Image (cartoon, one colour):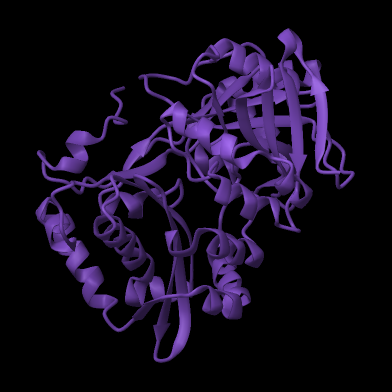
Length: 411
């Protein structure tokens, strides 16, 4: 069973296309056409990405479609995932004394809090890749349809519907605290996404370096020097298939150190991404003295480069600046493929800022099935904000990336 149908108000019909069986039930040409007419491209909603995700045997995912009079008016990506918090206090600024007490109680003696959540949007990506709608559907109607739909279908795997849904990630284009955008959803804010706008005049990495301030330019040169012993190569699908398990082991060396986890990468997603995206899914391997010690991968969208995942031997961060070199290689790739922007994700903010990435605030909205629990959480979450950012300032005052970064906010 790949499709579950139901009716919602005003004649619109929603269909849930679950997991691999859903690949054949979605009209992918219409799906991609809707994204194109929205004039807001999305790497994670692209049909190639959706097919790769739906094929995963280790994830529980659906492509959701809304039709009105047989015409496609809305799409979204939904995944039932396991969320795990290990050190929430490091990512938030607490304004109420009792918050830490409740947080410690939730995390228990082992400092671990896990729960199932229905995620609207990619669990392994950041930015607004949750849904797209036809241009004539008003925003309040979009959210109403989503709210009335989100808990109406359980997976064809037979798993129960999670008790909470999370809509991620809505860009915050205003100053001050996060705001409730629609009734019935609780706004939350954690770490921002780090973005880097590329000057179209740049032809190589040297042009990028010229717009950095002296201190940052010196750091980049030092990173290139420390990492010059790496042999970096582009991998074919055959090599990805052959080494997929080794790549996941390197990825886990980084992933297992994170404080909050929402889903995780599996070998089959790397393989299927390479199969569906071809050269537009770039995988680079890092070898040192003949040994594989790291990898990075990225999706090439129409205008953007999505810096997806990295994995590496942790001990090489200080001695060989392997992670910093990977960030620089993402920038080099973006320049050489003439992308307009690089999306670097929402981890390791300080290091990403040192190479010029700048923050875009993001809001996640949550909605609980139980109205009483929803009210309690709404009250509970009013007591915290994201931890205050102290980021590196890498650019000269007139640098393109700084001037063009419309996501910078005043406080």
